[in-house]
Image 1 (cartoon, rainbow, N blue to C red):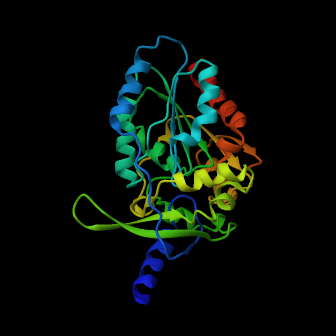
Image 2 (tube, rainbow, N blue to C red):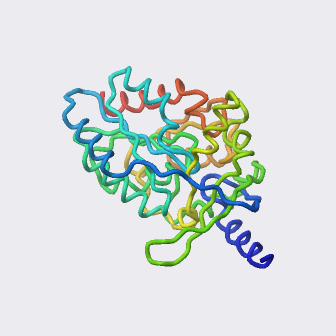
Length: 293
C-alpha cells in the first residue's frame, strides 16, 4: 500500500497537478464529483443564441478544473444585463485534446462573432479549441494557462516562474476510462479549498459550497502537449490575479507576455471571477469592443 501511495505521488508530482499547481501534497481520501449537464443543453443554448439577432458577439465562458460553469454566474449576469448572448458550457476535464474538441463543437453551433474566455485550465482548452474558427474574434484569459505549442501544464508548472506558490493539497482517486483502463483524477481537499482558491474572501458557507461542488481533473489533462496556440493569430487579453495561489502570478505574467496579450493585473485570488466579477466583465467587454466594434 505504501509503495502504491509513493507511485501515485510521483505521478502527480510529475504532472504538477494540471490546473495551476507548482506542487501537490496528497491526502488519503477521495472526493466524488457531481454530474453536470451535457451536450444536449449546450446545443439548446447555442440554438437559442442563433435565433437572437443583435450586433454584440456571443461570449463563451469555459471554466477550469476544480470548478464548474456556475462559477461564472456573477459574470454571466453582468454580461446579459449589457446585452451580450452568453454560453457557459461544461468543460469535461478528461484530457486537453478531447476537452478542446468538445468546446470546438460548441463554437461551431454558434452563428456570428464569438469572444472566447477561459479560466485556469480552461485557458489551455480555449488555446486549442479554436481550430481555425474564423468566428472567434478574441481570446480572454482569466488567471489562466496560455500554453505554446508542445507545452503541457506539467512543463509550464516546472518553469522557474511557477516556483512562488506553495504546494496545494489534492486527493487522488481512480476512475474507469472508456477504453477499460484505469485513470487518475484529482480533487482539491475541500477543507483547504477556501484558502487555495479564494484566499478566504467569501462567506464561509459559500466557500464550503464551492468546495463540495468542484469537479475533479484527470491527470491526462496535465500531461498532454498543447497544439498550435490560437493566440498566435487571434487577439488576446489576459487578467493576472495578483494573489493567485493556484497558478503562480509570475507564470501568468510570463504567459501573457509571450502571447502578446493586452494585460491587466487585479488584486484577488484564483477564482477572481467570483470575487471581482466586475473587473472580469470589463475586460471581456474591452475585448469585444476592440474586435467586433
